[in-house]
Length: 258
Length: 358
Image 1 (tube, one colour):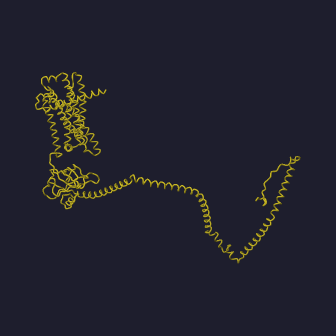
Image 2: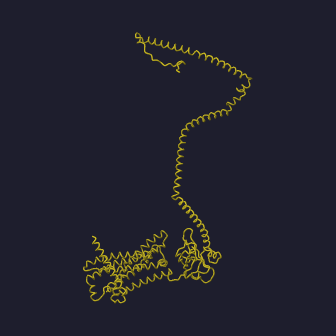
Image 3: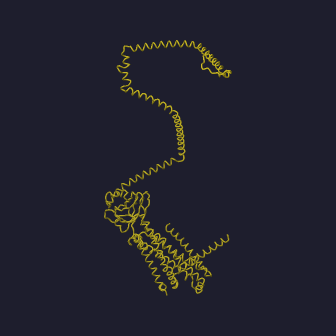
């Protein structure tokens, strides 16, 4: 029993060490983007297309729904206690500071993280990685860095769209509850939102994008021989990704308010 | 080839550019609304207390926000240094003899910081200059001499608030003194004095118990006395009734007094018959006296003859008993009725002086 626990612990430490080395290698390769060829850039564009542009519809649905719910629930409740002005801080807190980055990251992890892990797992099984290496193409440079950059950029940009659409939806639905001129709504919103809120949102999205890309690629490349391993590592990637996203969300929120 | 794949670069470019535009636009509007890109000029003021003041508090001139409080700190003289951040658009309002005033609502509706610009048309005060507050002597002097532009309507409200504020201060002082008293009482009721108080309370308890005992004794005594008192009271009531009746009789025009005072009544007759009735009564009393003397002699004679009479009576009673026996024997003769029954001895009711044992 003790031996098994010890083996398990040693294996976990080895995996963690390998993951740290893997992440360091990927991040180091990112800074060599200047010497990247046109093919890598094309891979990056395609990754942003799949991760960002294609996810815009589902992000729009989420943001519009969240904005509408906040304005419907918040306006009626706050109006009862005569604190309608608190609606703007609530919108900023829920959509910009917390909801936007978090929901965007969950969507990207569910869609693109799973896709990346599955694609890389299949490439390993089909020995495509070995083929790249045999012709002198660094898989980190060609496969991983564009995915890391693509996912991170897409997450940040999707977070911006989430904010725009969510706050816009709040204004639209506010017209049904208690009509308010757009100028007044926009002015109040802009006077209440702090630069720190905006930076926090962007910083969270950046970290979440990096986490999603690293977790997905690491788990995708951990497939060894069989295709049956692919669903296993995919599920594992999703679990690890969600856990790390929530953990860093709490951590960054604490840093922001400390 | 699908449209998205074919124009992937353009679509991604648009996707990114739009997001960047949104982001920059938000930053720009946010900066404009929050004056992130404008310069503010900092001035210093001094207040007696920081109560009602807060960082970020608006500084208003006739309803317009001309700046905010940027910092509050306690200085070496235990006064409160307040740093005012005045917007560049209102810099020309900050002239010499300007005064700043903190108004706190007495009913808890917050506080406001009002700025009164100086009346002169000099150049604006340089940055980091001192602006006196209305609760300092300098500020009061400037306001009283009319050197600052203070609206009259506002002055009325200010005066009312200024009158209310000392009252509130007095109330606060009263509450504080009450608190101090309560604290002293609490302190005096500390452990050493609690023992003393407990001792006193024990004595009081014993005293109360003794009083209860005395009260019970009094109750018992009263329960015994009440019947007697009731009887006495009944007698008194009877006497009172009698006196009442007597009094009524005396008050009666046909009662005792008129009869006694009647000229033809007994008293008048007694006093006015030349001792005739008196002499008659006197002779009757003399006759009664003679009779009493005779009765006394007879009684003495009877006393002297009592043994003889007693013996005679005893002999007579014996004779009667024997006669009764004979008659009973005759009545119960076996020849006639069945003999003479036995008679029970009867205790004598009469006892002579000689029967007594000494």
